[in-house]
Amino acid sequence: MSPVTERSVDTLARCLAVGGVALFPTDTVYGLATEPDSREGVERLYALKGRPPDRPAAVMFFSLELALESLAEIGPDTRLAVETLLPGPLTLLVPNPARRFPLACGPVPERLGVRVPALPEDLTALEAMRWPLLQSSANRSGGADPRRLLDVDREIRDGVDLQIDGGELAGTPSTVVDLTGYEGEGAFTVVREGAMPAAEVGARLP
Image (cartoon, rainbow, N blue to C red; front, side):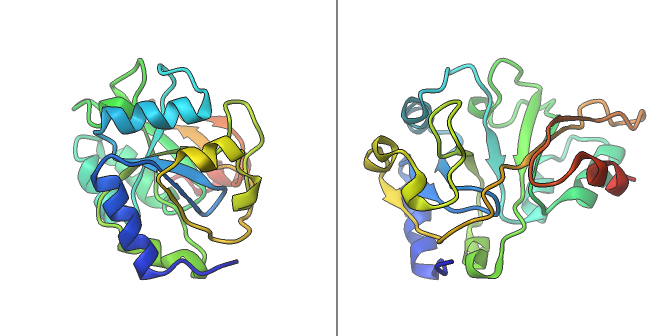
């Protein structure tokens, strides 16, 4: 795995600040990222993937503290569940009553997908990112999830503004867990089993 440097992270931050689209490594697979409030950036990201514009994406934070600050309206039970599961190879669907990050929410603005990756040592420089990014896997819609930069479709690589090579990644996408019914009920659903087994998700939840 190639180490990601402070310089590459600074370049990533500047790319996103102007609504650019970047190709970058995560704790699971390679992803595409843009500024969550940039309609132009989000439209370009979706077009590169060939993904319908009404499909939701996730918002990735590189700090659990920053994620919780943006989820200020969630209840105490859901907050505890988020604190228990993250950071990790998970996408958590949580209530979003304030309708934050609407471009990431698709047709259900009251629900938000949240990621806080557990980064391997060679990618920890990404923790210097102090604001969130809208993120989706760097594959054509329905295609295989890329574990190496060169596994990413050539048209996607040619279409982004920045590529960051993090070497070979784990290659299994995040597990998606719906926590929108967790408050007061403890109800959750594993929507997609990925890098974390469903049984482990259940065992970790309080």
